[in-house]
Figure (spheres, rainbow, N blue to C red):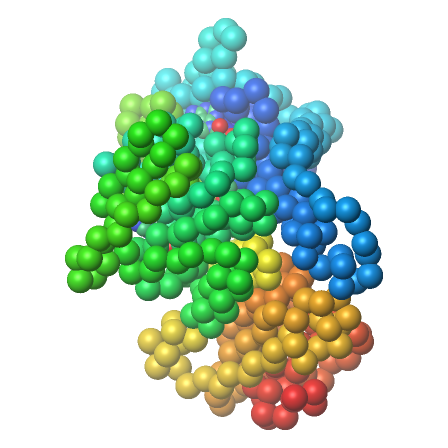
Amino acid sequence: MDYQVIVIGSGPGGYVAAIRCAQLGFKTAIVEKYSSLGGTCLNVGCIPSKALLDSSEHFHNATHTFKTHGIDISEPKVNFKQMIVRKSDVVSQNTDGIEYLMKKNKIDVFNGLGSFLDPHTIQIEGKETQSITGEKIIIATGSKPASLPFIKVDKKRVITSTEALELKEVPKHLLIIGGGVIGLELGSVYARLGAKVSVVEFLDGIIPNMDKTMSKELQKSLKGLGFDFYLSHKVTGVAVKGKEITVTAENKTSETIRLKGDYCLVSIGRKAYTEGLGLDKIGVALDDRGRVVVDQNLKTNLDHIWAIGDVVKGAMLAHKAEEEGVFVAEQMAGQQPHIHYNLIPGVVYTWPEVASVGATEDELKKEKRPIKIGKFPYKALGRARASMDTEGLVKIIADASTDEILGIHIIGARAADMIAAGVTAMEFRASAEDVARMSHAHPTYMEAVKEACLSATENRPIHM
Ligand code: FAD
Ligand code: NAI
């Protein structure tokens, strides 16, 4: 065999798996169909979206808050072309970084579409066609945007997140189908840059996988930014006429709305990507949603093939894919790794940010688990007032009898970074009282977590 391990796909799942395999002493190769490494996350996902979110947030602050801070500038203007150039530079810095890491770890990189010729042989169709053999193989081919059968995504006016990160102009009216993470993050970018943004969502709330309090608070904040929401609306048609898009949707009583805009972002989820891999040839099983079926060890129905990340079940998150990459490599080395799926945090990088770990209130109520809840609003924090970021709250859910923290939900400034402390607390099975009795630096946003824990444990917050 040419390699001990071959990884197909160089996203956060694949490249992390390859690095961990190399660290553990396996002779490793990685196959990537695009010329740039890093997968969805680095090229058309996490990184470029955060670059544009930051740029647009600076513009928003320059127009809305600088004056109050005592900074007088002439009216700021958007140089959108430059914003996209900076975003692309950030992407290159990150993808170049992965190339460096592959070299550093002596991982052979093959550019081209990988497919199984037989259970141990991968054909790579790149500039030339070649084949390599591997004892063990990891499928990390990720996901692609999903659409609806009646929508023709022309990638010009009816677009997915990939095109929304590369537009030539700021839309006048961006119509968004799906009020999930992508719709709200990219909608925020364009709303801050001056677009009118309308979101049509099938369910009765946005970010439906998160705690309802977060969903309601975020909707309020985004309405403040100028978003229009059409909840409980099923999209029935998308028509394109020149530069005009018409989205038709129906509510539960079959009343129809028609929204006209100049761009339509389809963000209704993503689907596992296995096209061209030749899995049928070797008999790797897929489920009814096209995901590679894996057992609790992330092994497919073939003993030497594993699958990780977006192409298998579970949250479609970069850090989930990374954990799975490490998990599989360590298993191959005979170790006994573990992933605590319940404690994989979720973050929405809107402003305010939303971050969660553990169970939601509804999930625990469904389980009939007796719980107690503590909340603390950002507006009662000195730190939040000092930086004029008073929107948001922390919600702690603890077991009613043991006081163990079961869920932490934060909406507000810096929530994305704060949630790591929540993960730590829950990994060590902290009680709300444990956290409430720890010293938290003043003034910080984390004081809201301490106060919410005080509120959950004994209903005695200090500053409220
Ligand atoms: P991918 O990153 O999709 O990588 C798969 C790779 O496999 C791709 O490079 C693909 O070209 C390659 N490939 C596929 N088939 C073959 C083949 N046959 N041969 C060779 N190569 C192949 N997640 C977060 O955690 N945080 C975020 O902030 C975040 N933001 C996002 C923003 C957007 C706009 C999008 C679209 C996604 C975002 N995500 C975010 C989700 C995140 O990008 C994915 O969960 C993550 O990239 C999954 O990693 P992966 O390694 O499983 O797959
Ligand atoms: P999503 O699953 O987050 O949201 C899709 C939304 O579309 C849901 O609210 C759903 O109810 C709605 N929807 C589905 N069908 C619809 C229809 N016919 N009409 C109207 N609404 C409909 O998916 P999204 O936003 O496309 O993101 C895909 C994946 O990418 C997510 O799983 C997410 O985990 C990942 N991602 C993560 C980010 C982060 O971690 N910050 C950022 C962006 C994406």
